[in-house]
Length: 170
Image (tube, rainbow, N blue to C red; front, top):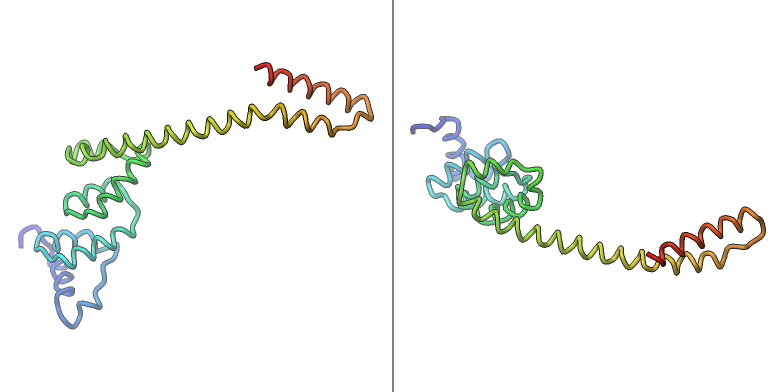
């Protein structure tokens, strides 16, 4: 078979032989070439086993492109989400070069995740604003509990009152 290695073929046969098929296992070393064989020769159950195994491995742009190439829907969806979630650290250029179709599907996912990030950031900013607005009241209550026994304590309390006034004035 052109472009195929004999050792890969022997591994594929190991999955097809009745006596040894359950002793053969898909692993990190063989999943890539087995997937190619199983997809090319339409061994759908074995191809599904490859996808299930790939779902346990870390995502990557290469895994995204592989999933698209071999029609692995669950793996493709997972990798698309994860690559979009972490796109700042991913080699997105590989998608541009390898597959315009993946890029077309990637951009809306990226936009959606960016909108979600912006909404979360806005929510956090609103929460922080509430906390900052409550700060003068909290500090004022705290000042009420500080005894005025010494000049140093009175001086510290005066500085705190000054800061509270500046925060409230803001």
